[in-house]
Length: 114
Image 1: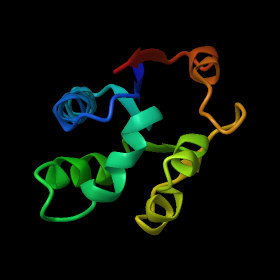
Image 2: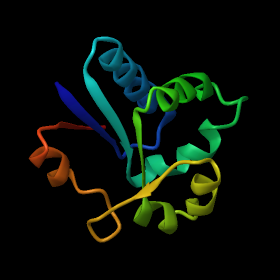
Image 3: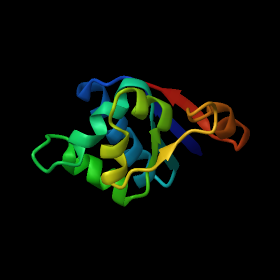
Image 4: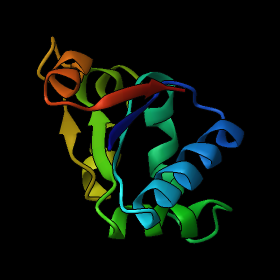
């Protein structure tokens, strides 16, 4: 099973569930990818800092290859594109600067939005 978790919500209490579910899917042998979209892109610069409460989970997800990237258009719009790139997170988006869900669906991925 392949699942792409598209995160639009910028609330850390929502994002923790994305991280936990992606790691759980991965541990269970499923393919999972996290795509940061909308307001969630603004979380990324803080999540790479060790003092952030979710930094350990975020690092685990990144180490497992679960983080696909952050929306290029939203990152630019919210003023965090340079911070995201500096953190080594890919800026992605082949649909007017946004990641296209259709591409994942056509490749057999189940898409879940948060």
